[in-house]
Amino acid sequence: MKAFTFNPSGKLVFGAGSSKNLGAETSALGSKVLLVTGKRFLRQTGRLMDIKANLLEAGCDVIPFERVPPEPALSLVDEALDVIKELGCNVVVAVGGGSAVDVGKAAAGLARAPGTPLEYFKGRELETKGLPFIAVPTTAGSGTEVTSNAVLIDEESRVKTSIRSSYMVPDLAIIDPELMLSLPANLTAHSGMDALCQAIEAYVSTGASPLTDVLALDSPVRLIRHLPIVYADGRNIDERTEVALGSLMGGLAFSNAGLGLAHGMAHPIGVETGLPHGLICALLLPEVIRFNIPSAVHKYARIAKSALIVKESTPDNQAAAELAAAVDALNDELGIAKHRHELRIARDIWPPMIERALKAWSTKRNPRPVVAEDVERILGEF
Image 1 (cartoon, rainbow, N blue to C red):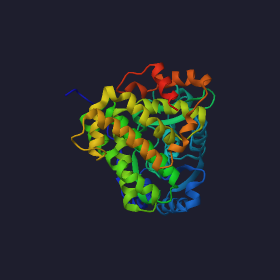
Image 2 (image 1 turned 30 degrees about the vertical axis):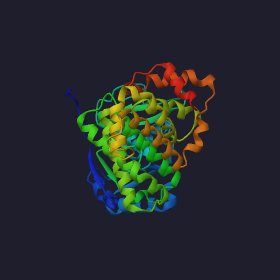
Image 3 (image 1 turned 135 degrees about the vertical axis):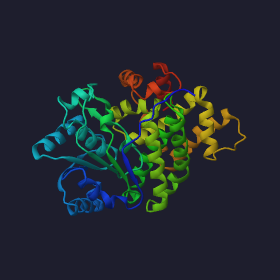
Image 4 (image 1 turned 45 degrees about the vertical axis):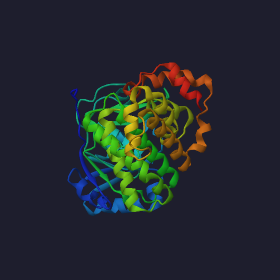
């Protein structure tokens, strides 16, 4: 067995209704809260008022930052830092999807750092802990509530990548499936397939270890079984809980093991097309599995067998191929396959996309080495 490192996340609180403890948990870390959320979803569902009331009842002063879109720009972190400095916030709470959590995470992490967010986006190392940070996801997908990176887009260079530091791991993540009950079916599908892609890529990653394997194998089994039920009945709290747990497990796995080619390609494709990240990952995943089978056949087969896609006696090559076919079928069931044609990207913008995909941190952990022609071949499948 080769040596490995496993970096645990901060404190985790999981379960239906667990967000009711947000005020008490926050007040133990600070009293003046920058509350980072998306622009509409929490307000429309009435959850935003509940969250603010919970924080206020615990004695917190709440400064709302309701500005985060699905694909956040680096400039939003600058804006959040201005608010933190101007109003003296001493704790950051992000409630929302992966984008809101990433903006809050970056703002908290850089609040005490010299220099600009752009410098850290370009690779400057963070040398000190920022403000206390609490992540409360409202989707089961990104896993960012347990990771050390924040994915953002630099609008000027049109690069989508991460600010990354061990100092940025959330101090606390509260995963409450009740906050996910109002999530629309399409967002349930996109975020859930992002979680599935993360788990599968973590399982076959060159950075995988015995600890990440346990998490990364359980995660897709849960997601393949329960995500279609949640898609059909979003108010089913038991099924939401299973999907949320599967997403959390996958997040813990990939935050240590790394990802793979699907995520390496998804970021530059997302910048060029504006398509939702989870949808892109979902469509790429079957093609990447097929590409990787020569280097990861036994692990793909183990997922297929554990998820009861095939019988235990099925030969590994066949089982791995059936896993790719099962993801295709799942995409069809979740209304994602109909968007396949949207990945038919003009060939004149392939070269910069391919260059960025090859340079991506995720691609470097792919189990099969990747060259430009491989990415071209996968893009050509659409």
